[in-house]
Every structure is written in C-alpha cells, then in structure tokens.
Amino acid sequence: MRNWRTWLALIVIAALSWVELQYISESSPDSMEGPIRKSLHIVFLFVVMLTGYWGWYKHPLKWLRNLWILSYSFSIFALLPLWIIASRFHYPGILDFVHNVIKAFISPVPFLILLVFSKMKSLTHDT
Image (cartoon, rainbow, N blue to C red; front, top):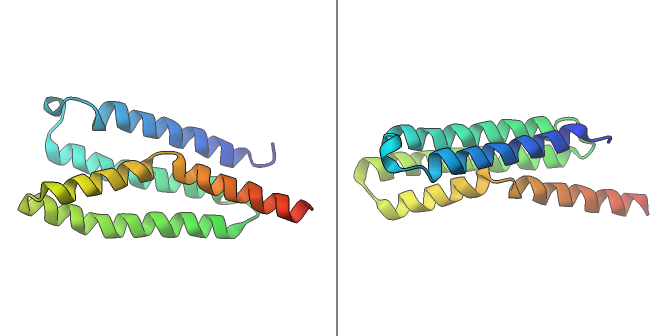
C-alpha cells in the first residue's frame, strides 16, 4: 500500500468522471444552459488534472507527474481557444471534437495508462 495516493486519486478521478458523465454530459439540455454546461466541462477537466497531479506528486517516477501535467496543460490551453472560437462562430463539428477530447481526458483512462507504465517500469527495475 505504498502508493495510496495514486490509488485514491484514481478513485476520485473515476468518481469525477461518473459525475460529469451523469449530470453534465448526459443530462437533458433543458436542465442547464449551454455556456454553463460547457464551462463545467472545463472545470471538471481542471479538477481531474489537479487530482492526477496530487496522485502522482510523491510517486518515485517523477516523469509520470511531468507527463501528466504537461498533457493536461496542453489539452486545456489548446482546447480552450478552439472552444471559444467554435462557440462564438457556431462550428458544431469543432465543438463535438472538443467535447470528445475533454471526455477522454476526464475519464480515468489516461491515469490508468500511466499507472500501467509505472508498473511496467517498476517490474523492469525489480529484475
């Protein structure tokens, strides 16, 4: 149970992903205004980024933390201007793309991929 932070972060990210999917992405469009719903996607993405950073913070493999923060920072700073432009000029194709990328980053899959990398790396160091 050496990496309890990592496992707790995974659980929190899975819970955040479920809440976002159930109450923001899949809720009826009438339950929330469009700009509020879109802003909440970005807020959840940022919270997942911080949760993952907290989970990887004291992990012995520092490159995992750096990869996590770099990929999420890039996604936020690359998607935010696209989202603003597509919202202002009504490009539904770009909005769908941004929404799908955000859903992928909010899911626990990126965290699980890094967790597998960390396990593979620790196995190669043990032998």
